[in-house]
Amino acid sequence: MRLLILCIISSFMLFLYGCGEDKAPEMVAAPVQADDIFTDREWSVVQRLSPLPETPPPNPTNRVADNPEAAQLGQMFFFDTRFSKDGTVACATCHSPFHGFADVEATSLGAGRGTRNAPTLLNAAYNQWQFWDGRTDTLWSQALVALEGEVEQAGTRLQYAHLVHQHYAADYETVFGELPDLADTTRFPADGKPGDSAFDSMSEADQHAVNIVFANIGKAIEAYERLLMSRNAPFDRFVAGDTEAISPEAKRGLKTFIGKGVCILCHDTPTFTDNAFHNLGVPQGTLPEDAGRYAGISLLLSDPFNGGGVYSDDTAVATRILNFLEPIPRHQGEFKTPTLRNVTLTAPYFHTGEFPTLESVIEFNNVGGTVGNFVGQRERTLEPLRLSEQEKTDLVEFLETLTGELPPAHLLTKPNLP
Image 1: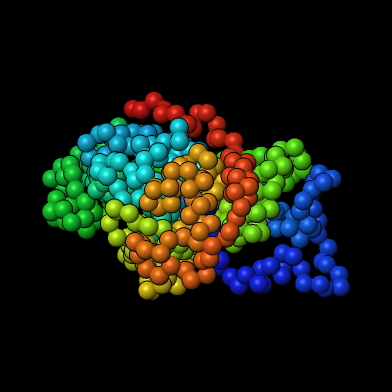
Image 2: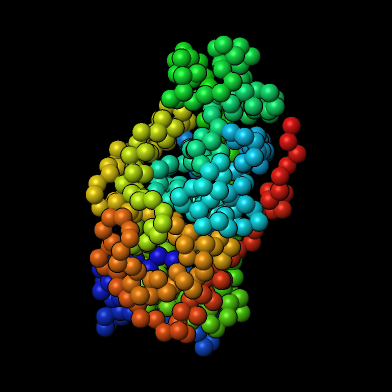
């Protein structure tokens, strides 16, 4: 949970509690229990957090984002360990359906040991940015980074193109159209990516053909991941009018969440994230220095598979956003606000994975964060919250009500692979 003040506290508190005006604006509130502890103004804030939209926002950069056949193909790719250097790692290795599509490891172990915790993929299609540093702007380009990442799946786009050609050709062509003829391994070597002599010696046209197949692998994976929705948590049922959906302790925790705990300032939408980046001073421990968003912006802008690149199916919106991005010193050590939905399923926490429990995260924020062993400038508005033990316990009770229904069972298992 991010307990970071993004705006002037006094302005927010005036909105939340009022300032003695003659007449408060009219509010439309869902039914609540007779002894409810929320003021009308507090309840209006609560109502902004639910429900989660039934479908994620459209992604015009991926023309098959909501194609059922693409999703079926993407599910096979997601669970297929052949999409890795040595045939032992799949997307599902670090994004396990048994752990909320996250990882129980502090930092993920794929082809090697990573330096960050794997975020959940549940509801990830609502995110504007992917990875802790936002170095990709779509789910399909995120998958491509992992597929070739040295400590993730560590394979190459030529290897994957041949895999699709050998085992998935019919399914691929149903969704994306004709594959290039990869039979000539003189033109299309068995293995390689940019920076490898085998790939770099190919003609520009052949490189482009392989890149299209590679991009389409990611687009199919995104189509599957867009189905990994988790909605209708007890909290949502409470806001909708079921007064017994959450306990009195959780209701008190919700009141702390939007009030004294100031959690609402970074977790202020139905996805329980502001989709922004902050430096909370999370200690790096024994992990290497991590520049976070500062490095992430540079990686995003240089990525040929970003939403404004030639492999995007619609560059208009993404290009307008990318044109405003520039790494500046204040981005050093900033990391994305994670969703709090299903947070009880996705321990350990923060980008370092060094916080094993929700209680440890709350205590970290309660004392105002740390004062050393982190990158960049910690946001100066961070202050101790001075929550009581009961308030901290109540916060945990509330966070437990954010666990929603899992996706349908057929999306949670490895399908039959060709």
